[in-house]
Image 1 (cartoon, helix red, strand yellow):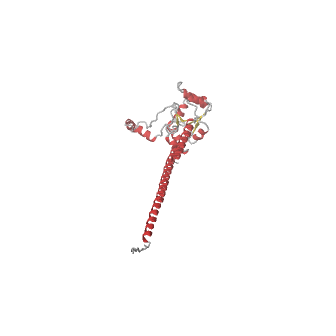
Image 2 (cartoon, rainbow, N blue to C red):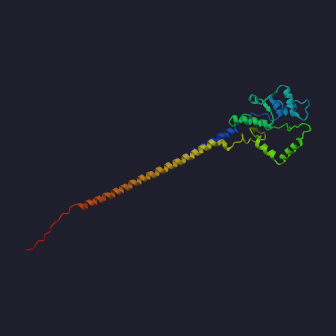
Length: 268
């Protein structure tokens, strides 16, 4: 029984592992656009947020010739495939309709993280690991402000001692949240097949081990009990025999003895 319980547990563990691995290996991704050019040529509609650095640069009157991505996006927007939205509240609805969303990395990560938390950790949407536009962020001061130089020096000091980088890693979301990489590298948080995927199998393994130990304990107790019953029966029989012999001996000792008078005959 112990071996049967153990092999059944191993069988269930192997079945869970195989099922999870098969589901992971056969999962198909719906992401087909690996570049801005592929996005435009596929005819997919896309959206972007109003008032961002991307929108300001897209609406520039003149775009450099080497910036091919922005030229394609501007033509696509003029043709009606691009759409500008006023807030991020309606982004998820557009994404469910098949739109692509162009936004800063940190904003995308925050949105995907919130959506994954609402869907119990799953990632119905993916952020493409594609960076084609970079811009800087700065603090604005009034002209001739006395705080500009000290504040800039203090920010530079924080950057040099590593506090800025530390705070970015501590408070900004990872760029790997629901990310899809084109170099066949899977996301550490969502795409990787981790040991947590098999927690049910480990629960079954623990239950099987407990069941096996319980069966072993029952078998040992049953064996000891049967041995005790058998030994007790033999001892009881021996005691009965001894008592019977003692009683028999006592009965013989207590029986009345007959006195026989023997007389000697005289010869005449």
